[in-house]
Image 1 (cartoon, rainbow, N blue to C red):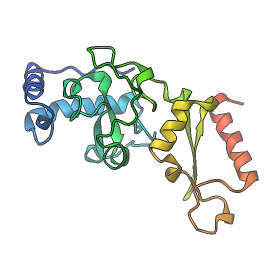
Image 2: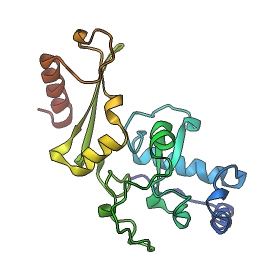
Image 3: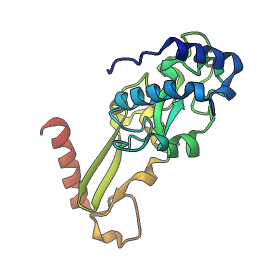
Image 4: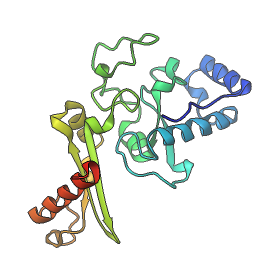
Length: 210
């Protein structure tokens, strides 16, 4: 785990002021720029430069295409706007176009207290800070030039893994350009049984040295 970011006295004061105003103080607030930069860099390190939801590789991407994600939306839970366990880094697809300010991933009754809200059992999807992503869902990718295979696999029938896969529409991120049987029609799934077998064997080898 990377070291938590250190905030200056001015940044801490800016957080307090923004908290008093509410969630509207988050956007277009120059006083929070340096703080956001630190949060974004820390978030990228925590996920090894991957989106916290779809696990796509974000390495080398400009910060402007990445979002500081409030897992509990700041518009509905402003008290957690600067709470570390409620912050992560995601791609814009997952944050702005899918999750937005939705809360339909929560398991009722959610106890909104100082600590109790941050329990894995309250979240149907894989929580970026409370769960081990790879224990629920595994993203595997193989590239060879312009050829690519990307697959997601729910681990051991995990309910959180399945919910995350469906909620973030991860089937649309799966690709297989190795299989000529697809005929350029862009079908995401691997249709060729031999290719799928070889791909799975390669993934097992990379992960477990088998």
